Image 1 (cartoon, rainbow, N blue to C red):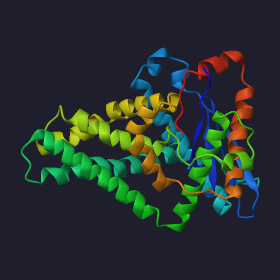
Image 2 (image 1 turned 90 degrees about the vertical axis):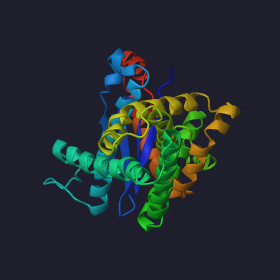
Image 3 (image 1 turned 120 degrees about the vertical axis):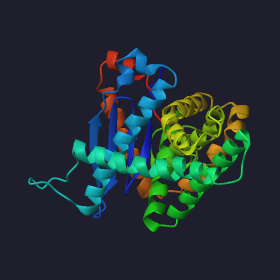
Image 4 (image 1 turned 180 degrees about the vertical axis):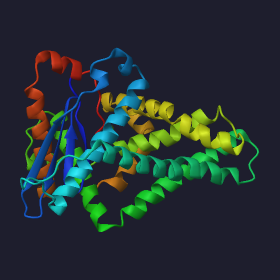
Length: 308
């Protein structure tokens, strides 16, 4: 089984990862490219329990968030040229800073995309349980799309979306077995079936079916249910994009998942050649690290799927 590769756009750069390594490449204000490479010790590659369907999705999401926060911190440090006592650019944030950032981001996301839509729907004169969860789901999707549209107006975020597009194009070129050159990468699509943006939309759609079993409870259980069922919903959404990534040539499946693909049009922009160069550099560093592994390590890592 081949190891999958994915990534994330950061400030003036791209993070690329496999199951066992990740690298972030960032364009400095002087025009150079700074790189940082780190290893990953994934529970999924070591314990069969964490590779069970749905469970692996929760683990993968947690890993992606942790790595994403670290990569963002590195890119921010490069952009501001923060250095340590030896004059080297800082690349590591403390565990406490990661936990604090996690907490703020998760609380914000839960309030905006989970608890908020549920409470707003509860104020509407809806007595039918089925209609309640459908309306709640539509409100949640509308809030999500509105949020993306608003942040896309920020100039700095537009460049992040360009790097997001560069990341997708680079992964496509790798998966097609092509040489990682700027010219080859630029020929590929901005859209990828394993994208995190599509994952978030699938989370919201799957939530409608899961919450249909909960109905329209009292307000405190309404809030708790939206939080407690999130790992299950995220795990199911992970299985959807994992399946889609392996069957991207199936036209019927791609038609079913088309809304997730369309949504990526809002979070990707056409990158310039310099941005593609950064994305290629990040992926090359990950590939080099993977090639240095032993056959046994590569076999274990091949069991882990990564979101693009």
